[in-house]
Amino acid sequence: MRKLSLLIICLSLLTSCVSGLNNNQKRKLSAVKFEHPELYQEEKSVGVAAALGILPGGGSFYTRHYAIGVVDLLLWPISILWDPFNGMNGAQEINYYSTIGNVKRAKKKELTDLKAEYVRGKISDKNFQIGKMEIESKYDLDSAL
Image (cartoon, rainbow, N blue to C red; front, side, top):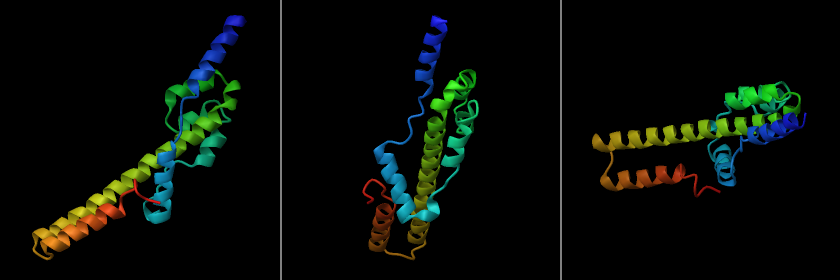
């Protein structure tokens, strides 16, 4: 019984490893929501992920953390203590990377369109450089907010 308790404690400490977003990532995500709401993408619902965390491994499986989900399944009902948080953090992580991908694709498209105009001779060198700087500034999430 003592070994089983120790094993459960060790596994529970190891399974709660979906750390969520750091402060810089949270700031970038907020900047996108504020400045470019059309680029924000909620691929996974944070609320659904937390609610599914009550089920055996549900939050972890929902957010594609399958190994953690299996351990949570084995440790259910004790895993109810951490799996809703894992689910929330995992959903935030997925949404962050999906949104950042949208921002990068939008920036690349605008730069490609600008370069095409320049190559066709529709804009001057000066206007190309100005346009490029404006696009870089528009999508610079490190200096946002």
